[in-house]
Length: 485
Ligand code: CTP
Ligand code: MN
Ligand code: MN
Image (cartoon, rainbow, N blue to C red; front, side, top):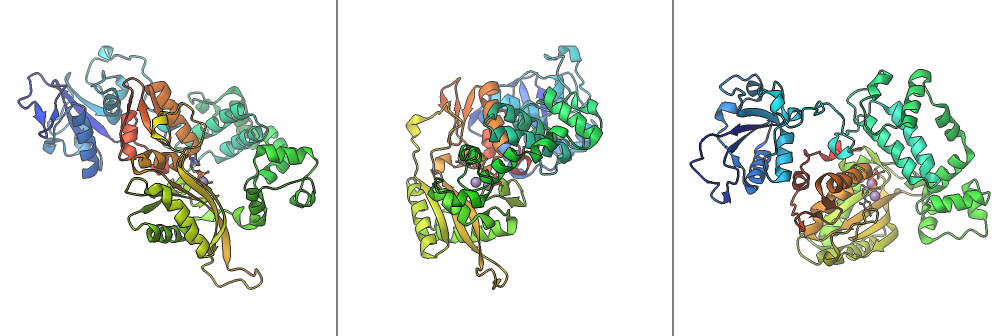
């Protein structure tokens, strides 16, 4: 854990009551020095301005604390005393969220608390290495060291999901997510003791896999006809668990049987799903995503030269492959978000690169915020598309086509909602689910794709960047590539 906030309690009143000329200093007996390994100027400015806006005094004179390692070695003049502390950035983020300096606890120290530990307010505080039960307090990269366990737990989760048991399914998803965040492979069963979100059932599966190399329950599911058929059917675009189950219960087992069954009526989405199944069931590569970005960008700019396009979803989290490509469009003037998607779709049609489109117009209404219902989708204008992507290589004459069908999602929020929408669409689903839960349960705030609302003050909290949202929630910033929970 690198970042540090240096805190000193001042004896004398500061000579300047105003710092930076504007913000009033509310907490006169606390002075902050920000020291962080490899901290860039923009991050320092961001953190300093945030603290000042909340009434903290931030000292810019960092000369004698330039070196992070020197600070930790207590050399070069900075020594922890009863009124000087070298603290982890968690003290800073919690204080920003609380809007006041929170009491210093043992867990806030980087090392060697110089104060008498009895004076700390939380003597039973957990060690810093403890894994949080909230995915938004864990850094989960794509580097999964526990794949043999997480794959198994996800099969169990998927099986329950396909039979409509969302609650129990979530328990296995959470267990898998905790294991994905670990910096190394589990070696002994005891190592799971201190981990959160691992129920009896998950532990038993982990134990069996550690001992036998596989889980009999998972093997059973993988060979189960119902599971295999449901998984096959729900892999079709537009086919959810309900339809898949309906087809299974009617004795259907293959696509051929579904397509030749006279009583089966496919909707438009499912028809497209079957028509382009071969292409859209294949993963989309990062190279293909980049090629699509150029096409989407070109169309968007043609419609509105001041609009910009960013990749979100799994590719923004650093994934090399995805089931689709997600784009978010930023329009700088109010109202433009409503016209851009229909115009872009029209252009794709005229270019003959649109195979399927489902445009959902915006139902966003500022007056209906905050929403207390989080399972629902957001209200922004969006579209779910299947597009033609031309192959880079020469056309395969036998295949008879020189393109691949690819699923593409576009969303166009109003400018002042952009940051919340970007955060929501970046995912992962589990990361965002826990971020919302954390906001509500731990901070009394409501977060969704539209806004962040503080229940205590009945105000909406503004955010220009994702960092602002994490700061409002008193959370350390988690980069998109660390949100693969
Ligand atoms: N999302 C959302 N509102 C929607 C649709 C999607 O907030 N109406 C969010 C999802 O919760 C997810 C993200 O957008 O966090 C991307 O969704 P999706 O493309 O389904 O998943 P990815 O994480 O991109 O995974 P993949 O690589 O398989 O596409
Ligand atoms: Mn995606
Ligand atoms: Mn998507």
